[in-house]
Length: 406
Ligand code: HEM
Image (tube, rainbow, N blue to C red; front, side, top):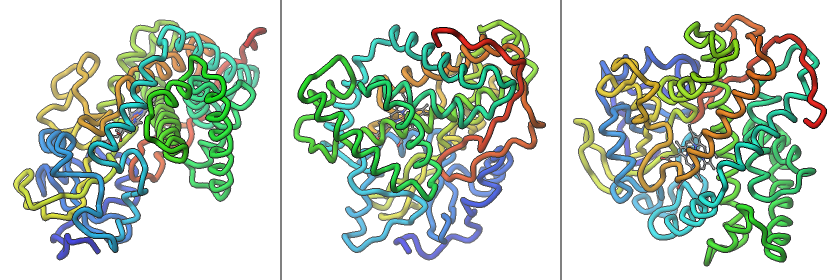
């Protein structure tokens, strides 16, 4: 147990079907009964605070001194972090201060040199290639065959991996994210591939993200570099895949997007933004630990308490909720990408948007009558703590031509 004992009465379990399903009602209930900072129980019984007030979430995300990522500062070396938080020592998102700034700064600087115009062309090429594999069939499961593959192929290409290795990396990342039995082997293959890529780019630097990282990441060992790349590739794959999937779900089920499905493109951007408010791919940010006693949203947070920012809950706060104010299309004040030192580093959100938008536009161009193959209430959300994404998105369409150069 953490220093948060004794448990607060009425603590809400943050696991099970309710937290994995439609959380709208759950957040409303939590807000009504507990306010913006909710006492919760993590899977395994550990207590924590879930922050679902927009203002309070902002405060936690932007105050890295009061709410650091390193649990050992206040708990000492024998502490065992709650398994549900997914703490992994040394991983970028659990570093603080100067070390974190240096490592994430190198990642951001390397990503900033990606030519976004060229990226769009690459995305179109990858999308066409993936669609060619199922265009003639008339049906496909889009999460596995498309949404997950797109970002991993694009990110692998950006890193400078040869074309022949991209699909293998995309598949291994999916195996790891599913936590399947073969995940350890997939992780091993990822390390081997990245070690080889580092050697190649060190010998012959190119105009790719890995060569830039090797240039900018000073004082970082190869093992640390590979860990940072794992965060970049897995974060971009998982989050962008669910952004694509959740947006397609919205567009395929909501009449407001019917025109777009039959040829118009203008509302793909609107649907992508609406999803960041209503079904955001990252429900909860990785955990933080309070450095000292403080007050937050009317609650006393004790030094050492686990604090989890509910990004979905905070964006649903009626004080800011876009749908309450009528237009999520032009409102980008959601917390889908976090904010502060640990927020999704610029320009990653823009790159993700290019990947997601192109993936959806090309799909709708190539398969204009794409439609769900099951009733919407049969689509299932993954039972995950951090992620909001579909287990599967099966669709039908009229079989289409395979592009000759695809
Ligand atoms: C090209 C695609 C992407 C890349 C390369 C990327 C990269 C990263 C990296 C490196 C971090 C760790 C930052 C740190 O801890 O210092 C991060 C954090 C994060 N990213 Fe992204 N990301 C991508 C797409 C997305 C998408 C599509 C979303 C959601 C819509 C997202 C949401 C987040 C969130 C919520 C965090 C954590 C914020 C926190 O810990 O408080 N990312 N991302």
